[in-house]
Image 1 (cartoon, rainbow, N blue to C red):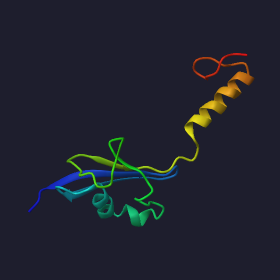
Image 2 (cartoon, rainbow, N blue to C red):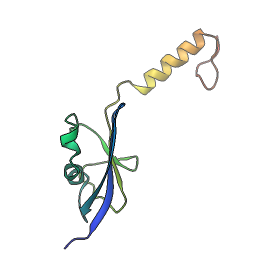
Image 3 (tube, one colour):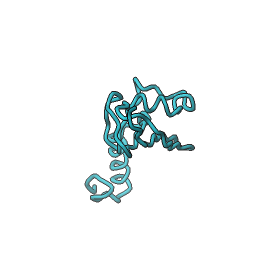
Length: 108
């Protein structure tokens, strides 16, 4: 009989977060652990062929094997391009005369 591992699975929306502790057999993949947790039935928008997943903040594939104490994270798609947001913030700081190393951009 394979030994049991205790892992956590995390998924967060702006208004609600779920962190589930799950016992899985040794050799379980990320995908099987997520399926076993029941999160897919709670959050219909999760699609493991689209959503990226990770273990302890490092992106991994769904066929990665979990270890004792791992925290699997299911990531949502970004709603804005971070580079574009930084560029707009720097432009606004320049226009307002408060550009510096923190806000980005060079003063006018």
